[in-house]
Length: 328
Image (cartoon, rainbow, N blue to C red; front, side, top):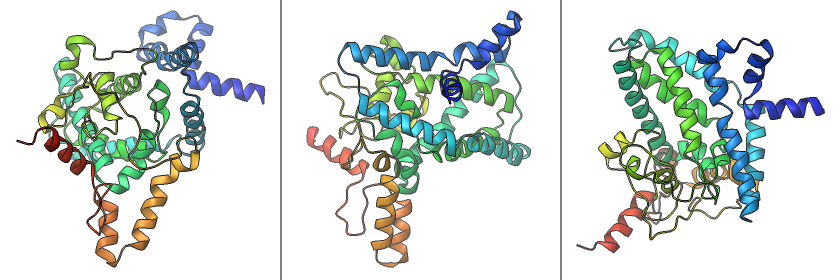
């Protein structure tokens, strides 16, 4: 039992490969791809530990958030551990013959591939907010009412497979080399965890001039907000190019404190409500909707829509707010 707990801790911190190289004594392996990843992989888990310790020091430990997300982490480890990787492999095999161009492992094709990856990420993320069924998979990630690095582990177990099907399909069809794709996925996954860094560790996360070039933790804090100005913005991960193109980029307003969480009433300390709450509500709405068409609309229309016309989607909430502050 103790050994199993120790192994889970080692797996969480991602240090097993690092220890393996140290035990082998062949330090040249640190210059290989596996060696580099063995060094980088533990960074985010170690930052999570530091952030939690700082939270205790600041008397803002966010224990409710950590407790529920830890339960989600354990649940996902058991239920959905290998599904996402299997879907990536399947999509590569299915769509690689249909790629519209061929790329190579050069720096300029790497830049192209990263921009394409960000497009795939944008599409998946946008749909996750605009299609009720996909929101049910994504909403778990938005339920925490505080921001910290552990929030990057708060996901419904089926979200990663759904996300990777969309991202991988777009990348492969647009000619991204599979080897380059896996490198990008590692880089983007590491940065995607880092942008959840909380105020306990980095108070002002705009990062100066970088705020105009990349998606900073400040931008991602805005994305996790339920403020009318902030709601449903900043869908990119590292490069903010697609948010700029599609008009969904929103900077943090220094005079507007971020209010984290989802718009519905939620028991944020309750695992069942956090993990399955949106799915239960969707089932109730579909069951109670009159007619097949309305039932279908509840599944594919944005969260907040209802057949009575009294619901408000995020788009409506934001437009009403913008109109209120800029009536002209």
